[in-house]
Amino acid sequence: MSKLPPLTLPGSVANRQRAGAGKIPPVTMDRTVAQAPAPSDQVGMGENRIQISTYFTKVLVDGQPPDVLYSGDRNWARVRVTLRTAGPVAVGQFSNLYPVLSGKGQTLQTGVPAVFDIAKGSKLYVAAQSVNRIDLAIEPYPWLETITGLLMSLVSAVTGGATLLASGKTSKIG
Amino acid sequence: MAFPQPNSELYTTGGADFFRLKTPLSSPGDMYESLVSGLGMALGPESDIANVNVAYFDAQAPNFMQFTQVSPSRSFVGRLDANNSGRYAPAQRPGRVLIWPSDLYDPNYRPRAFVAPTDQITFISPVLDVIQYFSDPGTLTPSRVDKEYQFQNYIVSGTLYIVVPYYGRKYCYVNFTNRNTVSPNTFGITGVNYAITDDSSVNPYHQETVIRAPAAVGAGATVTVRITAGLTGMFDALVFSVNNNGPAPLRIVVSDESQG
Image 1 (cartoon, helix red, strand yellow):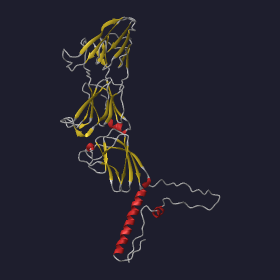
Image 2 (cartoon, rainbow over the protein chains, first blue to last red):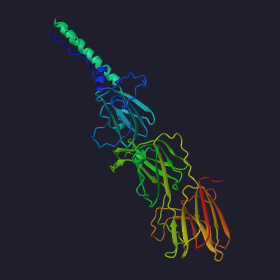
Image 3 (cartoon, helix red, strand yellow):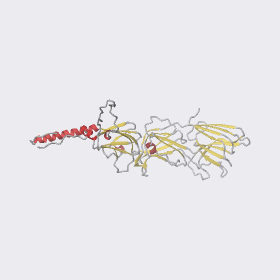
Image 4 (cartoon, helix red, strand yellow):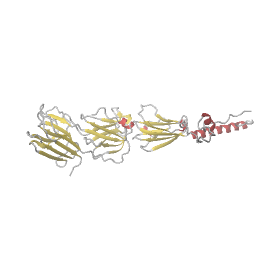
């Protein structure tokens, strides 16, 4: 009889408590001591923090791939880019953005924010033919990672169970 | 030209909304560049040069270079791209935005009456002031500020010539008073339009218009001259001449307004 592994997720409550994040400090029973817990001395977790920065484009030599504005290796993220200079600057999810005005990417408009939801595993490229200033805000979606992980685990469990049922064996999830 | 040249990329990375090219000219061939694109181009407030040429990358032009001009009465609102990845043809130079004065300037100019080596000449170097906007400026009214020059004491052996830029100006007020209590001072004004010429030749092509023929100004006397575009004309420069050390206050105010 086979047994599927317990369903645990990277961002689950159990994992977070094991890591110490969000842990409620012990409460004293001494009535002479204030009961309100002291504020946490830890800053927010890196995956929840919005990355706010200014990005400067550069002129690339012919044949060089465009720069990566955001690489979604770990997280889903909402990327907000605002061109502060005249451009032209093109952004897109494919690396063949050149020439900048070829239409292979979206051309940013000066002073107008452009928002992109970047899936985990994909990248946002930027291409320019001169130095430009771009306001960049990357807002991660850790809960979206949790949801997608949960969904994938459920799908895996369901398909695994279905496979076992189809093979005529009993199964026990969890 | 100013050295080092103003760098447009430093304006970009420094957070400015514009690139200001403000530099005195040192030779007729001065040419400047901007490495970044702009959404508007206009004359700066302190420019002595009235007409400025701008070249930019345009893939539709045969050599990929297109031209426009800005002046006190006309700015350019719209995208002018610097295409550092592209190349102008046939020079194969990067497609930057190029800026240079359309007006002529000749620091080797000498008045026809100039007698070397006793006479001296001094130039107020014309200032090229151009602003390239990084964000949409909407509309641009590139008026220049009035400029005021004041001279008082002179080092003179023969005649001293003072050349003041006057490109595109429509009005000039001149006030000269001889405060030397003993000697008269011979004071004159000439309007000059530069030409492309060989200054070492005996017949340079510059045009000179006598506005006030050199004449003695007695001790304590005052000369006031108003130069207007309508009555006198328009010149690249005004040349003032004196032949005495002074003191002789000379106040010159130039303006783009015709002042009625």
